[in-house]
Amino acid sequence: MTDIPGFDFGAILQASPIVLGMTEGSPESVFSRLFDALVAERRLPVDLREKARAAVNAREQAGCTALANGIAIPHGYMDEVESPVVAIGVHARGVDCSSIDGQPSRIFILLLNHPGSRDHIRFLAAVNRRLIIPEVRAGILVAQSRDEVLHLLAG
Figure 1: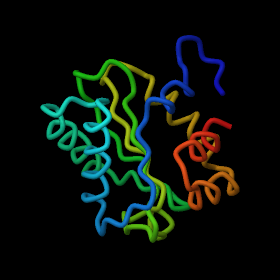
Figure 2: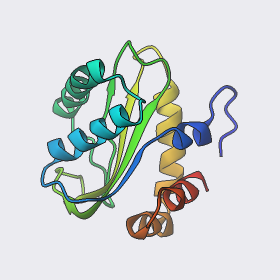
Figure 3: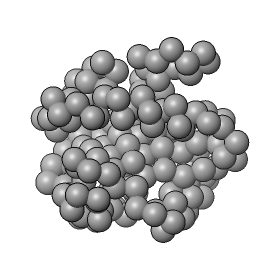
Figure 4: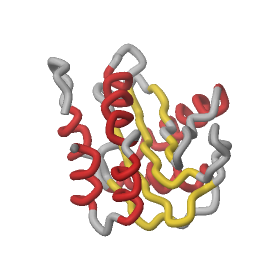
C-alpha cells in the first residue's frame, strides 16, 4: 500500500481491532468502546486505558477530528506506545461529532502514537488515500466481517 521504508500500513491494519455494528450514542461512548477493544485484544495495556482516553480527549478539545463524509479519526499521543495503535469502528446510524460537513460520523479510526514519531502522519495519509474513495466508504459501512473491512482499507 505504501512505499515508505520502515512503515507497514497493512501490518498496522492487521493488528487493529475492528468493531462492527456500533450503536453508542455519543462520541465519548464510541471512543470508550474502541478503547475496550484495544484492551481486549491486548493492543493497549489495561493500566494505560485512562491515559489513552485522556490523550484522545485532549486532542479532541484542541480541535475536532471529525472529517467530512462520515469519517472521524480521533487520535492522541502517548510516550508508552512505540508504534501506531489503531482501533476501527463502524457505527450503524452515525454519531454527531461536529464534523466539517455536518454529517454524523460512521467510520471511526482511533489512533494512538508516540509523540516523537511521524508514523501517525504516514498512517493518516495511507488511510485517507483509501477513505477518499466513495466505494470504499460505502463498502465499509455494509461490511459483515473484519476481513471485509481490512480488504477495503488495504486496497
